[in-house]
Image 1: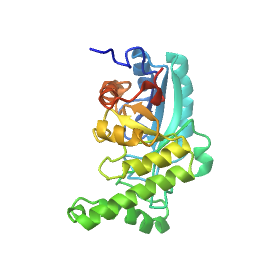
Image 2: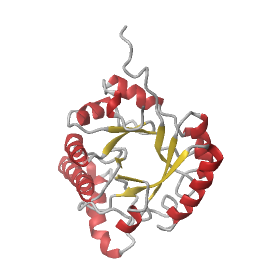
Image 3: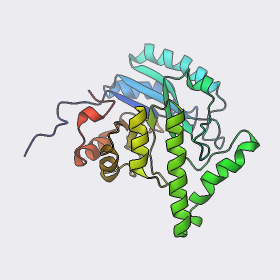
Length: 255
């Protein structure tokens, strides 16, 4: 049997994790401690943006500065580099994110993805959010025409966000909300944005990787950890990459 092209490579970072600052169960220090125990060099603390339901979101944009203080302390305690980022919500078909450019520019990582539980801070944003969310509600998606419209709108929202913002990673594409993977991959490849292979969400399977990889996009392995014990648990990502025959050089956080 031929040796796997992955045998001489290792994952050096987990760039998508959550803590109690959004809807995770651990602290910044706990995530960094587990990252160190798994031999990682870097961990990303990437809390959900503020315009979603309260128990999922950060309290406000100011929370990211508090996370930065905790990140510096965790770095000293563990020796792991701790990056401060956000998993932004795409808020409407125009691709608006739920953090302003001034906050985004101060982050180490900008992740973005589609989530159903968004809630605009400004009531004027409700019609745009509704155009994105309503066609994706399960009862309405029983109708073929609604499903097609939802897929087109979801794809437009993500590709517009990628074109308009400097996004490092698009998270869990296809999770609960259907997306045209090749079209999104082309937009990401043009902008140098990576697409996530998630150990948490099975929508990022080998069919998704093959479809995206054909468009020239690169990838990142992520745990999307919601508790410290999940940080760096990326074995499923590796299995998906191997089955999809993805070259290690196409994955951002391996070396």
